Image (tube, rainbow, N blue to C red):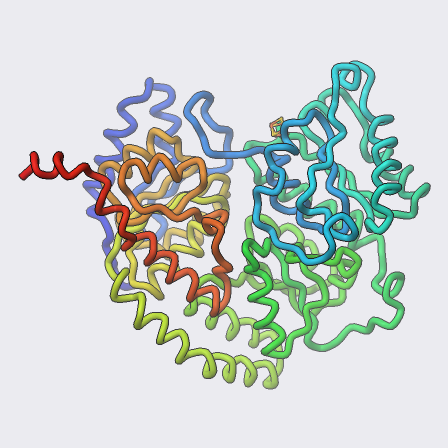
Length: 489
Ligand code: SF4
């Protein structure tokens, strides 16, 4: 392996030590396990997927956020009911840019906020009856809904409500699909458990319970059928990838949840391959399809041109020569375009230092795209809610000396940024304005800063353009008042 040093490991280790020295002893010891100086062989490991330390300002969300906000809220035909008090549904209302087609209020309910709005009496007497009534009202108001997703907020599990039995009863009465998710925020340690709960419910309540022919009598499985999971269509990401699959001759029979049609999901058990984009959030489903039906799965990366081409070649290896030839033709067709994008943006971004902090996938996927395609240098990356397997995939992809931070605290990130002065930070909205005030270019790596898509080949153009706009944008020249600059002279 080529040894590529991006930071002096001794300096990086000292930076971690100095930062930790501000904490009381117990916190220092605990947080030290979450910070490491990268060794691409994976020698320096962080611990992950454990409880946050109270009071340190973690960026994490909860199980409800992972379940409703990330996976379930995008199932456009199912009414997503935030079951509990008003807050969780309100704050997660239309904040994730998970695009979906359809007619809003007819067969698409993604951008609504539905809540059972618990009051004190619901906490005292239980909310099952209220949920029962809410389902009746909603199906009356929105008769074209395929069903409903019931997403529990904290109190529901604490007061002993039984949303599963309400869902079963209402399914019989209404003939709609009703899926109960016990994704209360007190469960687990982050968004991550919410993903797992959603995967299991999709498998048990939808894929396993129904047959494709129940819903689409003419449907027959085909030799090039695939399932695409773990792409949330942020700014249209998934649509870019679906176009590519079509161009290379694959038939996507079900997608979870890129602009999904939930009635297609039972077809997943007849596919030839499950293509996973975000492994953190959907590998559970992929693994269960492999275990039960022998369907292999492949972890793709459609961020950046190099990895998109590489993923397509890997996918083609699961199929015959026809798909392999189609992939080569696709790559041949788009290579001149990719080279043009690189020729324009790479000279403006080459060597620029980047720090990333995102959720469970992009800290490595985006890092690879920025380094391989645009020549940027990732000097730090970290995840809010990754597990050990994500970090194992990350160490070899980064240069030696890069900082690795798990569930980083706002204090730690501030100190790292102050010391390292990156040319670009890619993180979330809670971090954005802090670092912009420090005079450091910032791109939101959850919402794509209302831009995107970044997936696929056309997405690569937007990714390159946006990184250039951030790093080389004019405002950064004016961060310091002219008279202060003069005083420095
Ligand atoms: S922790 Fe509980 S109250 Fe807070 S957002 Fe999550 S479900 Fe809602």
